[in-house]
Image 1 (cartoon, one colour):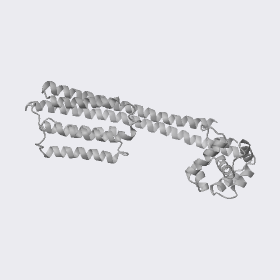
Image 2: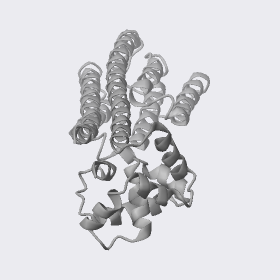
Image 3: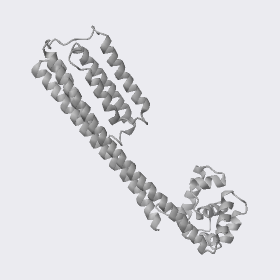
Length: 330
């Protein structure tokens, strides 16, 4: 009963660890979006106040409200898990085109091109290099193509700002360089915090896995101890396990010799159990898991799970109780 309780406790703890990571990562994303909100808000106010460029200011204000909208979405890492990655990729692509537009809009003299690098630095925060390798390659490709195109082509058909004077570009260039450096440092800080969350999650899972291994070992020792209590020698234990693993036709007879009271007690609980179900009970008595039972009986895992479900119902075993543990106690 003790190790059953611990197994249940560990499963609950694993879910709690994952939930804590999701909440913490979501909190990091919200903080990141909040900083983006203030950066774009500052830019929209700065452009309208100092240069009177209403169109650019309105455009940046709309993007500013977009960051607030993303922050307002609750449970981004769970409820929208399936669409989260495509949305992140789409946002990176959109921001790349926005940077390209403003780079051309300001005659390529305002230092807007530095924000291409800010986008590249932000990629590790939102995506995983192993799991999202091709997505990252796609984003890098889009950013690189935009950067090269803006560097070598004039795009005369694009609208150009009529609000900036020649001396204004020096001020904006310095401002963009400073904000690029600030964005880079911001990315480093958030990537570091994300790494801490991941390392914490890995450490918690390692502790959990180690505990599970200890409990499995304890469970095997308890089963072995019970067999010894039933006057079984080491040779008898190895013999019965070998017969079961090789699906020997004499296994069930030997099992009843080694465990003479097991089948009668099972039938006292429910006399309607058929031979194949009693055979499965014998294997679970030896603490064979679903995969091992499937291998021993040449059945699919789904068929074994279905059989175990019927046995659980016939023996009136609660879903919270491990069926192997229940049968080992008999």
